[in-house]
Length: 421
Image (cartoon, rainbow, N blue to C red; front, side):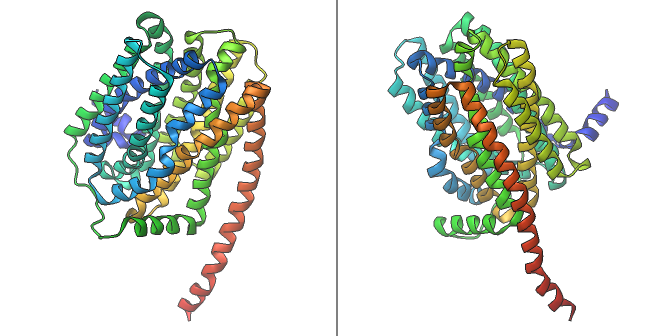
């Protein structure tokens, strides 16, 4: 048993830390509940509206608060105790999930009420996102950050596998309202783990005005040749890659003539691929360049997604979604890990908030676009259009990065020459 534990810690160094093991356990349970919630939520929206446009619009609404609150949240994350922030946000999420469950069970849920709960959840997430990203550096050493980020992604994607697979059956068995209540209970796991974690938080005690601090964070991120492009890539991924998942209920109903169980099966296929990608990043990231991971992941996602848009057989579709999930996770876990490796500690919370702004805050654009295109041309054509746009962005990003690195190196040459005199 001890040898197995030693081998596990050698492969996944983040498990060396007691605090991280507690955090890992709590998140594993909580994310599974969240994915149950997500599948039921998408099906609820579609049942209330029977509209691809509203699926995209409601998803956009859930992410829109990040546009307004994320940067201020990053300022708070740099100034306050991150553990206490997470306890507050997770408690808020518990209350909102329980409220939604009760409303669905009592048949009092309406589209306006659902939109209000969605908006409040988005406000909570706008603070929770940068706090949870920056909290990792409080519980592990920076050298093992890649392992923790990969394992966090694995937690997320384990929930992504188990949640949808179970959701299809549980919705039929227990009803959507009880799914939301199960999710509410799952937040207790992460709250208990946070209470057990003992940490000396790294807090920037410098007294800054919020707007000044936010501007400094933006200036720092935009001036860094690699961080700025990685943040832009996160934003483009939110618009063109992750927004495609919002059309899954429409594809299930119109292309595969399926139900909630079919939706759970296909989402689980994506989740299995994403889980494999997460474990690859956690265990192999140090042995290959991040740039290579990003390029391979991007190519795999584009090829699999484009092929999926032509699939009419559910089993072929599930195989293609496996590779799409694998590629997408390898790409964006590498993007996120590289940002966290490069960023200076004084700006970690603010850069994390910019990442949340790009990755979540820009997703409404993608959700509305793909919902609108799907309403006119169908979800399959919308996916093909988005995949072509991803390909064009990837080519542009590759050459832009080479150019920026060259200009950065040229700007440093006079300084180096002066130092040598």
